Image (tube, rainbow, N blue to C red; front, side, top):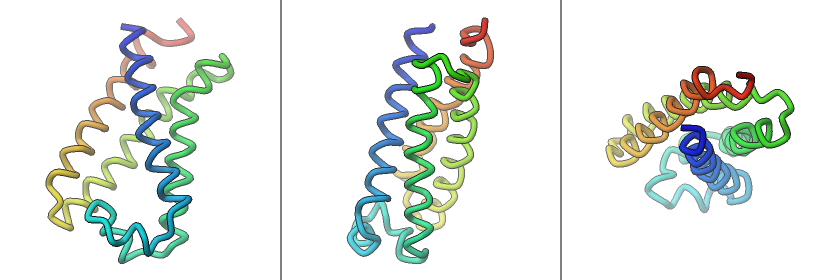
Length: 127
């Protein structure tokens, strides 16, 4: 179970890192031309960058606290926060009729719930 949680956290951290880097480094205008980032057309560049920074923090929060053994409780807390972020993404993509992207976000939510339940429960770092 511990190995599965580490792999899941690593995969989700990679997803968050990729999304975060894209949102913070790519201009809003370049993002807006892609179907998956159509939501950026109706928001400010600062909002896009803020979401990018939150995703970068999530990537760090899913891995670094456990690796360094400094406040490892932040791993499941980060997973819970990621669920909230993905619920917002699901709502946004749903409003745009992007069913495939909603389903992708459902998978990310399931992965984050697995991490949160596992790390708050039977495979807690403090146990």
